[in-house]
Picture 1 (tube, rainbow, N blue to C red):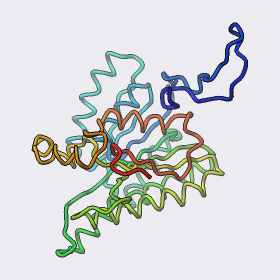
Picture 2 (picture 1 turned 60 degrees about the horizontal axis):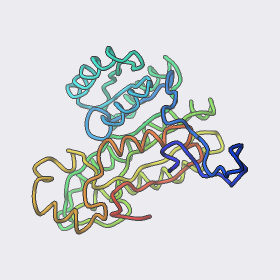
Picture 3 (picture 1 turned 120 degrees about the horizontal axis):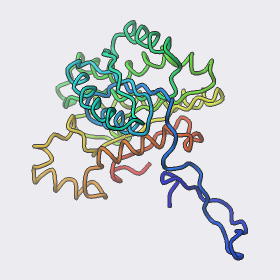
Picture 4 (picture 1 turned 60 degrees about the vertical axis):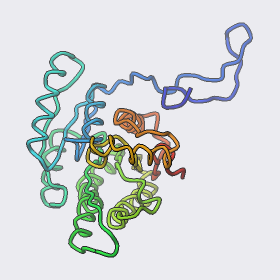
Amino acid sequence: MSVAQGFVEQPRTPSPDAGGWTLLRPYNPRLRQWAGLRVWVVGGSTGIGRATALALAARGAQVLVSARGAAALDALVAEHRQAAREQSTQHPLQAWPLDVTDAAAVRTCATEILAQGPLDLVLYCAGHYRAQRATAFDLAEMQRHMAINYSGALNLLDALLPAMIARRAGKILVMGSASALRGIKRASTYSAARGAQLAYVQAVGVEVAGHNVQINAIAQNFVDNPTYFPADVQANPRFQERLKREVPLGRLVGAREDAEFAAYLCSEAANCFVGQVFPLCGGWIQR
């Protein structure tokens, strides 16, 4: 059984049971008490951000969700409202429309959120991708990739990190891309922006660890996300063959699997991880 399932391997110690040996003991209960924790999911109206917001809300956390698209954000909140009514352990999602490329807006939004109480967890799930060949370089598109994938994360940390350091508590998880770890054709602009993002996570993560703040990232690829792999692409036989050829898992990682792993990294069981990047791509890269 793995740590993610709620257990961690321990040195062998005598068991009170008839002279046996205890190899495993509970480390973090699977149904962890999330009640009272405040979570801000930025870029949470669709895709993996949406799945993670719902997974944390189901655990009882107070989840605030931000995104550029107000319509998708409102639809998510309305959809979850019924689930919150049916399960008294769930808090209704709170919508906070936000454009992460607007540093002033991010700072204002963060100030208003922090005025209502401290944040325990922050997930940066915002992202932008558009295929671009190196032989047809578009500087404006490159800057767009950097503004959302990299600078947007910086805007968020600039607004939140001082409060977490002062409080000596908090976690930040960045949902990045494994494209930063392995070259991909027609993705040089995207890979560069994601590479800057992951490099920053690793550097700032080890620097703030001494303040009891944990910053990590998940490097995703071949995850069931309609932004990158829409239904028509997934149904294409050529794509299915590519999965079998390039991904040892032989399929896309499920959105729920991704969200559950993110939830684990946000839990107290993962307090030992700082400045680390975790590939989640079905074995497409092993680093």
